Image (cartoon, rainbow, N blue to C red; front, side, top):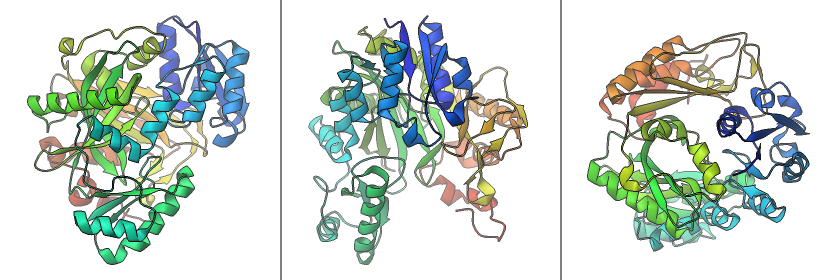
Length: 459
């Protein structure tokens, strides 16, 4: 087992990893930008090293500075968290070249799964359904149009690299394809340095279901059931829960087995997530595999009774998985709301600033993963997520009731958050009934409540 781990991240995930290290008796090393000198992860870690200026490219994306901090501190391993360099194969390769253990899959596996075209091919080789579409990236709008004509409109144009909803366009009309192809390719190139785009059939009103997997270096792979991630805005998840109210026991087993096959086909090691789209007829299609820990991992931790960060570290140290698939049973129902410093009433504009007042909810069935405190000044350079509020209970109804209570107790002063939107979602009758999909916010007209000052729609 490692004696010292450097955490190449910031915010709540850095705090989460530091706490796991402390539980395991491992010395933690934080890295921080000059804007994060007073951040919670900087002060909680056993050691902290400044790695550059506020801009991510100068600090949290600076591979050379992070590797130097690890070597200078005597760390044996680096945990990348999520975001930043977590799915960068060059970073994983640099760690390996410098004798540092990268707590995650190999550089080769990251590169394979980071290329969405190659990932689709991996799923097909594993015998897992993928949406009809191009066999690989398409180089011209004319080629994309030919494929769209074969599979039928509407279609999706998707960036071959990256994620986060960038480089994605829905095309309903053949007359719009060339324009949207250029837009998707340009956004993909700007966001990921890779302008390749592929075509796939649009799945109408799908559910977004993902399966958490763990795979060790000894050939054992298990899934830890699913997470429902269908409540989204512009392809960004807002609410996640486990288990999904959609899946029967047999479909859960079938999709879980498919997720394991994809991971094995990719030669995966560590914690990862296989994402699916499920249509109204309960047909499921491989979407992508994320080669890192997910933002929403706490709901799985609660449902399965495992510390996923601890398991990541154990796997990276060469240890075997602690459980077999047949030993796992769902223990509860859990729901997570992402609390962001953004204003739903002003088109979700980021709201950096100082938190002058703060009340954090608690009580039975409530967990808060956060890195903010009263007096903390939210910097404008990074993601707007302040916290993850996770509530759990013996069944879905109890988890929802506790989430309503916790959201009503959560108070931020000095900055604006999206708590009002989270409240609206959790109180919606459709949510209570489990009657939602990835178009829930648009179809339910929830966003209409959050009007701009000129009366326009919040979207």
